[in-house]
Picture 1: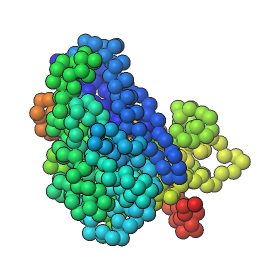
Picture 2: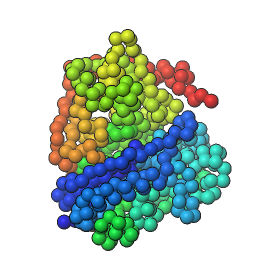
Picture 3: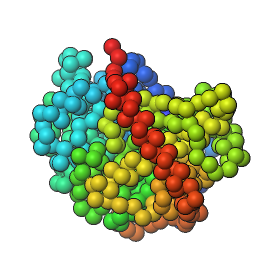
Picture 4: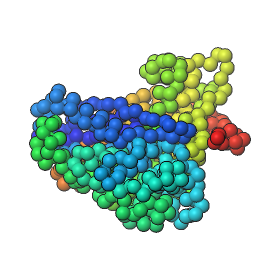
Length: 492
C-alpha cells in the first residue's frame, strides 16, 4: 500500500501525518519551533530550525515504525506563508527568516501603496507589513548590502523541500502571498519585483501545488528506511493546504481556520481582487482556482497567551467558561497582539482587555478572548461581503476547532451554520498529504480533495444574536477610539 506523508511547517510547530490510501491517519507527530523577537514588531525564525524539526520527526517515525516508513511513496508540504527565506550563492540562509507577523516593514508597505497604486489589483492585496515583498526595501534600509547577496528567495516550507530534494522551487499558492505574483496569470510579476527592489532572477521556479517537485535524496531515504524515488509534491501555503484537506475546492466553498493566526477562506472560480477591503485574493492549491481570504494575525494563540497570564491550562479555562453556560462577556478583548491585517491593515494595533472589575475572573477573561477572536471573524466576514462574497455556512478547521464551545460562539457571532469534519484539526498537514497523493498517482484535485465525514454541526443561537450584535459594536468602537486617539502609534 502506498503511504503519503503530509508535513506542515507552521509558526510554532512542525506537524506531520502519515496517511494510507483510504486516508486513515497511521501516525501523527509534531515538534515545537522557537520564534525570536529581536525588537519591536519583529518576529523571526531560523529556517534551519524548521528543517531540523522535520528531520527529527521523521527520524522518530523511522525508529518507531520502520515498516510503515518503507511504504511511503510521496511527501507533501504545507507551511506558514510570507516568511522571507533569503539564500546566498551556497543556498544557505543569509539571515533568519522575517515571518508573516513581523511588522517592521510598515513604512515600506505604506511607500509601496503610495507609489504603486496599480499593483494591488494584480498581486491580490495592498502591500502590508508581513508580506515578503515589503521586507526587501526594509532590508535595503536597515541591513545594507544584504539584498545584493541574495541568490534565491523562497518561503519557509520551500527550504524544507530544498533540504529534502536539493530542488529550488515554490508553488502558486505560497507565491501568491509574496506580493510578487501576477495572480490572474499565475506567473511572477517583473513590475512587482522591481517595485520592491528585488532582482527578478532571485525568484524561484513556479509549480502548481500537486506537481512533483523532486525526490527525496538517496541518503535521506536510506536514513528513514524509505524506498528510492519518493516523490515530493510542490505543496501549498497553509491556508490553501487546509482547503485541500477539507475539500474546499469548489466555487463558494468556505471555512474558518483557527490556528496560531486565523483565516476566513472562500474558494472562487476566477480571480476576484478586492484590495480596498484588505481582502486577500490569491491562487488556490487546486490548479485553475483562486480564493478570497480575510487574514487575521491572531487566532488560537490569543487563548494560549491569556492562559499563560493567569497560570492555567487552556483546557481548564475552557471548562470554566463552559460551566457558566452561554452568555456574552462583560469584558472586551481586542485580539491584536501582533497587529492586524483584515480589515484594519494596522501593524501597530495591540491587544486590549477593557471592562474589568474586582469581580472579574479568569473565566471572564477567557470568554472575552473567545468572543474577541470571533468578532475579528465578523470583521473579516463583512470585508468579504463588501468584496462581493457572502457566506451562508462554513467549515471550521485548525487547533482551535477542537473546542466545541469556541465553534458555537463563532456560529452565534457570525449567525451562520458551522460544521467540523473528522480530522479537521489536522488541517494543513492532512491537506499536504493529499497533495502528495495527487503528485504520486497523478490524480486531479477533484478525485482526491473530497470533503471528509462531517463530525458535527453548530446552528447559531438566535437568542444570543442581539447581545452579540451589541458586543460586536462595542468591540469595533473600542478599536476606533483607541486607534483614533493615537494609542496604537508606534513608540520610538
